[in-house]
Length: 174
Image 1 (cartoon, one colour):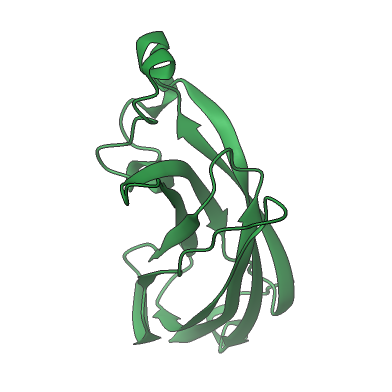
Image 2 (image 1 turned 180 degrees about the vertical axis):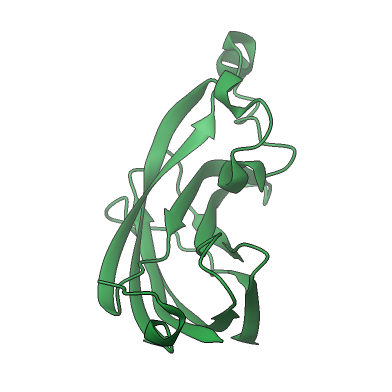
């Protein structure tokens, strides 16, 4: 089997209208992919920037995957959340980034978005609506094209990619 080792970190995020941010993440890949080692989902710690709007997470990522085919190349689903003064978590943004296919070190910028609430929700400040199933952001299934969205902020990742036996299976990655 061909193998992919993904390591690095979720460095942080900025441009969000809220403070006290954390990021939930999950790896999503096609049916031909198997996670051999590491964890496929997690959450960063909460960061409350005091001077600027940059949340620093430095959350490590380390996954080893095997595959029988390249269909469904791995992606990372990022969900940025904020915590209000009463301890309630609210959505700040969703983002999806593809894992780079070329071996080496990569700096990845993931732009996030969130569903735009109705005018009444925005006026009352009841918080941003959330997707019933965030996996739909990765797969593009359903009526996603009907969503009214707005940009939210940016998350930065530093990813290292190591491949093994890809050429044996006829895959030339650059």
